[in-house]
Amino acid sequence: MATTTAEIGFDLSLTEEQELTQRAARDFATEKVLPLAAEIDEQGKIPAEILREMAALGFMGTYVPEHYGGAGLDAVSNALVVEEINRACASTGVVLCTHVSLAVDPILHYGTEAQKEKYLPKLARGEWIGCFALSEPASGSDAAAMRTSARRDGDHWILNGTKNFITNGSLSNVAIVFAQTDPAQKRKGIAAFIVDKGTPGFSVGKLEKKLGIRGSDTAQLIFQDARVPAASLLGEVSEGYRIALSTLDGGRISIAAQAVGIARACLEDSLAYAKQREAFGKKVADFQAIQWMLADMATEIDAARLLTWRAAAMKDAGEDYILAAAEAKLFASDVAVKASRDCVQIFGGYGYLKDFPAERHYRDAKITEIYEGTSEIMKLVIAEEIFKE
Ligand SMILES: Cc1cc2nc3c(=O)[nH]c(=O)nc-3n(C[C@H](O)[C@H](O)[C@H](O)COP(=O)(O)OP(=O)(O)OC[C@H]3O[C@@H](n4cnc5c(N)ncnc54)[C@H](O)[C@@H]3O)c2cc1C
Image: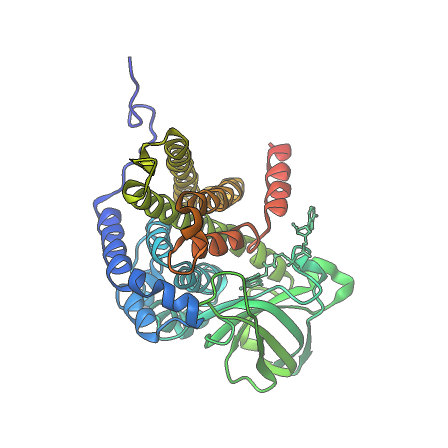
């Protein structure tokens, strides 16, 4: 006798509210973002109007409580929104992922009441954009080796150093910045700060030119005796590293959803193309070789989405989701890269041209295996968690 998911206490259906959110995101992404995706990639810029509309729909603070200006939904809803936006445009998608999961989230979870009141309404309503500054020129995976320093000076902290590869770096009004207060303390010496744009000594350095997600802004942030008020410390002085890691755990659910969105774009675009392109007197969709690629894509996308939803649901339930988030990101990013490779293949020579979306998906997909922890680092996290069990 077949067992339903409800009988085993595991419900995979979305609530009415989640379905409405998904539909709103899909309509917006299809009507407003998708038609601009090629231009965003080509110009290396996202029109401000797109970000404004995304904010008006509540997507810049999906799971921020309503009393802080958010939509008051949950992490599953955020994953649904992220998938839809990334299905249309991964550049726009990463602005959203970074803002919500890496800038808003740590303030929501570790901020004082005063910090929440100061920052969350503006960020959740999209009036301000946020970024997360952990990586440096000489430290990425090994984030604890950071050289940016923070020295206490009266009622201020003095920050010195350079942060590298910061998504939304030049666009942001506020940055979550990690710095070492005492190298002898190693990880325990790392502190997190909320740093406002315009802070004396804080400037934006060079903007990076990239393989993919070209519409998103990736910048260096420079701190030269930057004077940050003591009230801008996020959490305790010794808590910065923990805040960074736990923020990245949540961020990985977003990147998994981004990868699912990119992979879905590959499947939908490949399917449409294969149904109309002819070779040897048939549609290429009639060849079993093509059907198998599409079947693999469809199966793997569903599996990646289930892992992503599971991690998001665990976050909502207040469960430990470190393992689930790392598994979702590892698997979904691999699925996106493979789907994008097969998408170019199904488009044949046209897949290699800028006139079609396949080559953009191919370039965009790769980053999901790198940022917020590379695939190798995901395997380290997963191994550590399963050995613990
Ligand atoms: C477009 C883009 C946007 C980004 N956005 C942000 C952002 O907003 N904020 C931010 O702080 N950072 C950001 N990053 C940085 C990103 O998170 C790092 O690039 C990433 O974590 C890898 O660090 P790294 O580049 O220093 O590579 P490295 O750490 O030097 O790694 C090089 C290689 O060695 C492997 N490796 C390293 N350590 C191990 C190990 N212990 N075991 C096995 N293999 C290992 C890695 O997997 C990789 O293959 C962004 C990067 C890019 C490219």
